[in-house]
Length: 272
Image 1 (tube, helix red, strand yellow):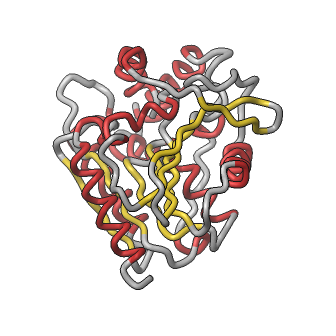
Image 2 (cartoon, rainbow, N blue to C red):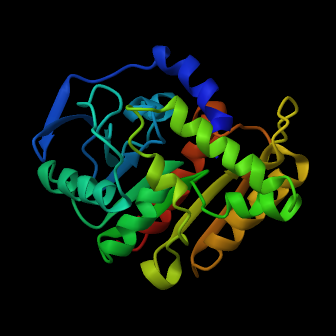
């Protein structure tokens, strides 16, 4: 459901900072930044369009016992432009190349927001054993369209198609992630990823100004439930719901994301 967040996102992009560090991946330059020198490496993968600056609100307050790495995927931030639509596999391979080129120590903790959360799931499935855990911040979930059809079987499919067409019109020639978020394949879960600690933070805040079914009171409730049900497939899964943030929880409630990150780091490192 990209339409519901695109306007807010586009109007705040100009406030983001960026880095002058670049790494070459498959012939393209991607911007990145590394902070800290702690033993646990943590990779931050932002949502669509924000680039790595999507983590600005928490970046300077990260725990001091980690090495943090953030990057902008191809076509975002100050990374080079993308061409055509990209697949989940291309996003995963991009991350795998970044891990190799930047010397990210495995197993590492993967922090993903929105589309970055979906890539985290897919990376964890494709590279089992490479992760020590995941922190997912309101990650993309393909069941979002099911929520709309469940609430309004008559008008729901029409709303979904309208949103889909609008997304492709808005992103024509520039948004290379649309096929990935609109194919709506089952999200990788415990059966695909294995037993690692996973914390998922989801917003269930009511959207008073929106007329979209997805942002109705029932839509928000069901969004929280499907996110909870997904993370609870993991024996060490933790679900955190918030009524105080929109989709960009790391901006609206940075202290919440930092707190859950610190708790997950402690869980990962306490027996080492």
